[in-house]
Image (cartoon, rainbow, N blue to C red; front, side, top):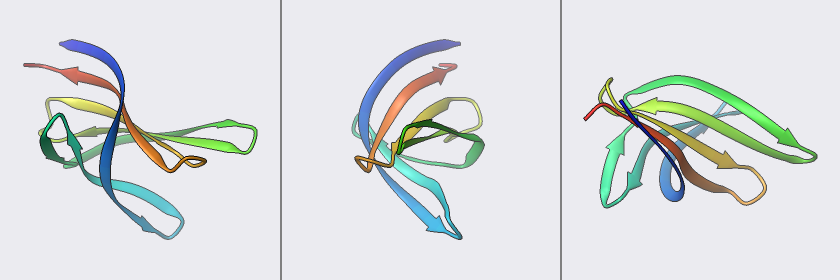
Length: 84
């Protein structure tokens, strides 16, 4: 398994319902990847700023750690865990 720390901005289409935000798909390096599996979600808080983290998979093999920053409303790919 190859693990890379990226911290790259990405575009994400998500669903906000019942006070929860869920990523549905994201564009990364010229590809649109569907979120087929949400493995986990956790939050980090620094004062009034809140950061949401999501471990997601597009195919059940490769995983991506996405983050959403509530102050800036920006998404990033923090890390990738690739089998290939």
